[in-house]
Image: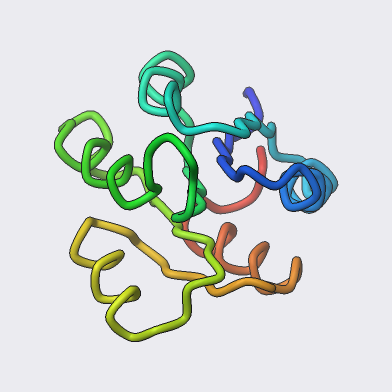
Length: 125
């Protein structure tokens, strides 16, 4: 059986490096993207088991990508986490109304993130 895939988008390479370390050490396959323009197309091609999106991106916001993902019935069961520095209640409400499964404020602990991943998609294999 193949490893479960997690598609992760963030414009900070440091954040992507940390996310990659957390998920690959737990046995998941990491698909990393540092810009938002091709995330949707990559999701269609790769069929990830879970998607993690930063909200604040230069080209397109994680909320917009989340909305687009939720419009596609192929992703009805795919958990989408928004991982962001924005902690206002209004931002969280926008994220949840866009279809986010979880809204996680940075800095998030690797342990907590891994707990959430396992809750939604189980172990890596």
